[in-house]
Image (cartoon, rainbow over all chains, first blue to last red; front, side):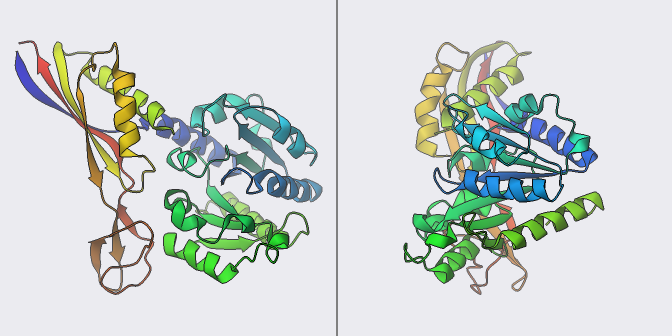
Length: 227
Length: 117
């Protein structure tokens, strides 16, 4: 018998990374922009996404959404009010979405017919950070009620985000929300990240966000890297 | 708490890597885990014992090498280690930097085994 060291140097999430890479290629080939929304439970992902889908759908853009939750299809029903095709992913206890779940739920959707695919992750500010879903943009949401130091408490998620979205701005005053402090904390964790301040209820900041999405889609279709 | 599923992936990958070998026993599995990987060391160790039960890896040791976050500062033209993930500033000049060179690792480095000759 002999002792031996077998060098492996292999990513632990290799299986997910390979599947996410395949999805990314499919999304790119179809010319669509994939957006992954991550936040803690209750930050307002669903209401924000419903507003986004509604506006894009109304403007004639071809959008679809997948939404992840441990149980229930409440969010899918809420998002479907926008008129866009929506599918619920129930993870039955799993605290994040994985690339395989995305692939399985795309089903018969023709990606070529889509311009935007939104993926609403399970509400969790820790685990979704590790799982690539093949998205072009990862958006981390933070509601004004959560406290300005949320990015410092959960640096991994905010550090992995391409966009930071401050939601429920209509409640900012009631929550004594210090927007400068929140923005500074986000920049401390993710220097240079794009920050939006929105309220899905009043529509504040939504036009700027939609302009950004359309310009990112334009870049995608022109073959340029999205920001 | 996604560490259990991460450890299950480790067990699966190690079994796969050792399939062609005549392994007597697995002594240790060495991981490299970055400070930005979002994975807790204690939770990995806790899950390991459960996940390895009844497998070739049962009784083996899980060793975790923590990989600190290193950033590159364009102003100083230098790479440095961050003391914490609360602030992405160059420790020399205090400028913010988004150029991360390491710290997101989540990998199986090596497996220590006893092999039948």
